[in-house]
Image 1 (tube, rainbow, N blue to C red):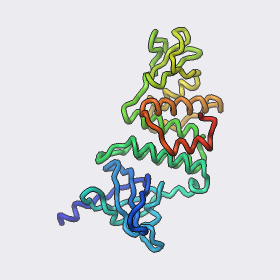
Image 2: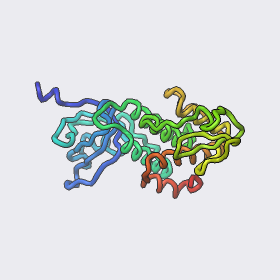
Image 3: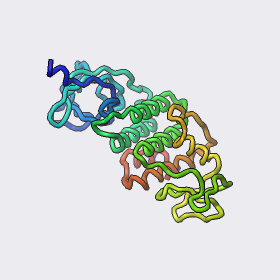
Image 4: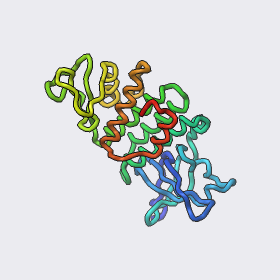
Length: 255
């Protein structure tokens, strides 16, 4: 009975699998609802007849039964709940989904509940898979909301110098995470922010989580928003993401 109580039953998304000594095994990183990031060994998962082979592939959302080990979990059972097949047939969507997974690997808690992180990732994969939202907007929402969950919330109330809340053109500093109005002058790293982009930023970062994907922008403002959110994330994180670099080769207009 004591051993049975140690079993962890949870659900999560497979973010990545790593090379293992045994070719038939998988070693996976999972974003779970109850324990955040955890790593698990899935013995024999690559075998054709494995009962949980499909459930341990990257991007699969699965119901998991895990046994705690010394430094990792052992996967006892896994059942797929959503595999997001359309993502695997489109290289651009797949590369963006893999970027979301890499972000989650670096920006999600370990050994702590991660309900909102998982919910954000699942919503993003769903909208990306079904094609019901512009991928650039999905990307901006994922980057922005993850930054907020990490505590990197920019100050969007108004100009950092004079307090003006609205202007025909404002400037956003990715390093400072602040706004400056046109009258106070452009900061050295300033990115121009139109009224539409500013409204979208406030909606993504300050609005109701349940509606953070529920908006649209003209194509030009969508690109401005995507560039701004990415530059803010990279400036605050001070690191590069290999999956993002690859996505740039498919969407060079972001650079």
